[in-house]
Image 1 (tube, chains in turn red, cyan):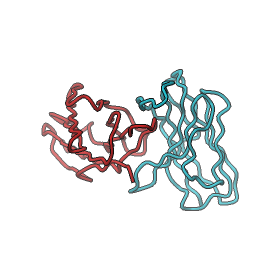
Image 2 (spheres, rainbow over the protein chains, first blue to last red):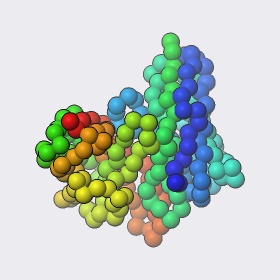
Image 3 (cartoon, rainbow over the protein chains, first blue to last red):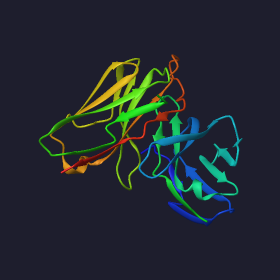
Image 4 (cartoon, each protein chain N blue to C red):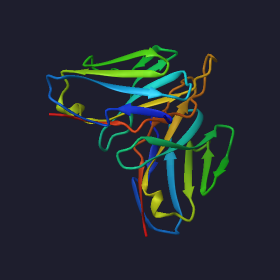
Amino acid sequence: SQQGEEDPQALSIQEGENATMNCSYKTSINNLQWYRQNSGRGLVHLILIRSNEREKHSGRLRVTLDTSKKSSSLLITASRAADTASYFCATDYSGYSTLTFGKGTMLLVSP
Amino acid sequence: ETGVTQTPRHLVMGMTNKKSLKCEQHLGHNAMYWYKQSAKKPLELMFVYNFKEQTENNSVPSRFSPECPNSSHLFLHLHTLQPEDSALYLCASSHVGLAVSPAADTQYFGPGTRLTVL
């Protein structure tokens, strides 16, 4: 299977803490994307990082990509209860124009 | 209308019923997708349409039949479903380049249809 694997499967933190989620994948990629899904809803795109980029920021989000280790991490700083959701990484493997999603990390942020 | 819409939002059907899911995108995209999301499983890509042409069918059973009449609308026709087909069905759209090996662009998802097969 080519799918990415998120780690951990679930994460529970307090408001104000940072949350870090990791994603590992298997083969060469064009880009890697992170999405968020609130319970039972559609996915919302958060950030896209290309294979020639190492780090990207968007507001409280920071994404890193290490192509030598075939891994990425998503850091959410100063988390809020509204950040409670499932987070998915999606990889765009070289030669394909479709995305492959992992199983996701379920994040719970308690007030 | 914003983004990608899906109707109905919830659907309960018997195994002998025929129903259709509808997806509409208002983003001017040229690619549309159907995904199936079951509990504790990764999102499964079912069908891809680029410029109204089906470009991928990921071994989906024939009881699921997609239709893409134009680049803004996508349907999923359902017939003789099984209880294990109960899931959240998500539609998405994106812009796809015309390069030989285009990179996947951001996908925009609808809210999904929660399907229960009795």
